Amino acid sequence: MIEKARDYLQKYFGYESFRTGQEQIIEQVLGGINTAGIMPTGGGKSICYQIPALLLPGVTLVISPLISLMKDQVDALEQNGIDATLLNSSISGIEASNRMNDIKQGRYKLVYVAPERLENTAFQRELANVDIALVAIDEAHCISQWGHDFRPSYLKIKNLLKEMPSAPTVLALTATATPHVTKDICQSLGISEQHTISTGFARDNLFFSVVKEENRGRFLMRYIEKNKNESGIIYAATRKEVDSLYAKLNKAGFKTGRYHAGMNEQDRSEQQEQFIRDDVPLIVATSAFGMGIDKSNVRYVIHYQTPKNMESYYQEAGRAGRDGLDSECILLYSPQDIQIQRFLIDQSNPSQEWQAQELKKLNRMKDYCFTEGCLQAYILQYFGEENPEDCGHCENCTDKRDSVEVTTQAQMVLSCMLRMGERFGKTMISQVLTGSRNKKIEEFGFQKISTYGIIKNQTAKDVADFIDFLTAKQYIEMTGGQYPVLKVTNAGREVLLGQKKVLRKEIKQVSSISIDHGL
Ligand code: ADP
Image 1 (tube, rainbow, N blue to C red):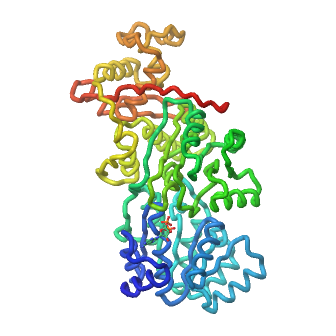
Image 2: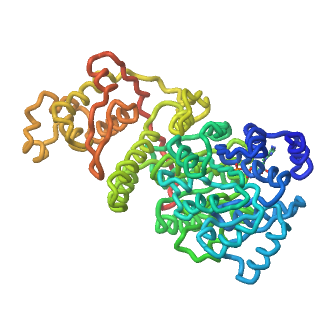
C-alpha cells in the first residue's frame, strides 16, 4: 500500500518524496495502528492523514480547531481533485443536514469538523451511521490540560471514538508537545506510546534571539524599517497593547494589520485575509492569532512581550519560515512581563497544583531569556529531546564575546542567600549584597551578616540581572507565587564548594539608536 501512497503523493500533491516522518506515520495508519505524530510547524502533517484518506475505504474525519484553516484545507483538496467538506458553525442548519446526507452516502473522502460540534448529541447520533475509517486530530495538544491551549471539547473525542461502530484508526498530530502532553494525548486517545512518531522539533531555518538590553519600542521600529518589504508578525500580550502598537506603526508609515479577540468576527477575518494575501506585510496580534494559519513566507516573528511559557512561544515563533527560507524569531524581554504573567497565574485558577505547574513553566520561559547556550537547543531540550546539537546560528551560538569567570561573585550571591535563610526574592537579596539601607533589611538584621554590602561597587539592578543569569544556569531555583523565593540548587552548592566554575559572557554594550517614533 505504501507504493500506492507514494504514487498519490505525486499524483494529487505533486511532491516527489515523503518528508521525514510522513512515510512512517502513513504506513502505521494504513496498517490500522493508532498513531501520534509530532512534527514541527510546516513539517507536513496534513498529508499524513490526507493520503490515507484516499487509500482507506470510508470517510476520514478530521477534527480541527480553526474554521479559517478548515476552509483553506478543503479548498486546496478540492483543487487537487479530492472530495472534501467541512462542518462548523459557519454552515447553516439546512446546508449542514444536506452535507450530512452526502457524507453518509460516501460522497466525501475527508470531512473536517470543529471540536465543538462533537458536543452536539444529534451530530453524534448521525456519525454512528457513517463509515469512518480514520479519525485525524489536528492540534492534538489541545486535549491535554497541561498543554497551553486546552480545549474542553477535545475531551469529548474519547467517548465519541468509543461509540463509533466502525472502530476507526486514530491519528493525533501536533507540533508542540512536551513528554507530559504526549503522554496525555496517547492515554486519552488509546495510542500506545511506542507508536508515537516524532521527527524532532528542530527548525534549521529559524534564527532565534532575545533582546534584553534595548528599548523595545525603538528596537521594533528600527527592525521593521530595515525589513520593510518582508512579511512579519508581532505578538503583543494584551488587546490594548495590540491597538496601541497598531496605531503607532501605521502612524510611522508601516502598513500594518491587527488581530485580537476583542474585534468582531468580520474585522478579524478581513485583517487575517489581507495579511495572508500580502496586502499588508505586517500584523500585530495577541496569541488569538495564527493557530493553523498557513502563510508560508513570514520572514520574522517578534514577541513584544514575553509569553507565558515555552509551548506558546515556540508555537507562535514557529509561524515564521514555513517555506523553509531563513527567518528570524525575536523575543523582546522585559522583567515586568514576567511579573504580569505571575500575577495573572496567581489570579486565575484556584487549583494550587495548576498554579505551581504554570509558574514552573513561566520560570523556564524566563530562563530561555537568560541562557547563554544555544537557544534552539534550549527549546529542543524543553520539549524532551536529549542532548540536542547547537544550531550554530542563533544569537548565542554566534555571540563572539569572550566569557569571563564570575565564580567568586556567584559564590557571594549564593552564600548570601544561605545566610538570609533562602526565604527571600531577588530584590531583597540584591539589596543586601549591595549594602542598601532599606528599613526592612535592618528589621531582619541583615546589615550584620558578612555578605552585607559585599558587592557594593555594583547597582542592585546589575546584581538582580546576575541573579537571573545564575537562575537560568540552574544554580538558583525559584519557588512560590507572585513573589518568588529563591533557593540554592545542588549545582549551586557545587559552585559554593568550589567544585564548579561559572563563566559569563561579557556584558553587552547597548547600541545607540537614533530612530525614535515615539514608542
Ligand atoms: P503542518 O501542518 O505540519 O504545519 P502542512 O501540512 O501545512 O504542515 O505542510 C506544510 C507545507 O509543506 C505545505 O505547503 C505542504 O504542501 C508542504 N509539504 C508537505 N509534505 C510535503 C512533501 N512530502 N514534499 C514537499 N512539500 C510538502
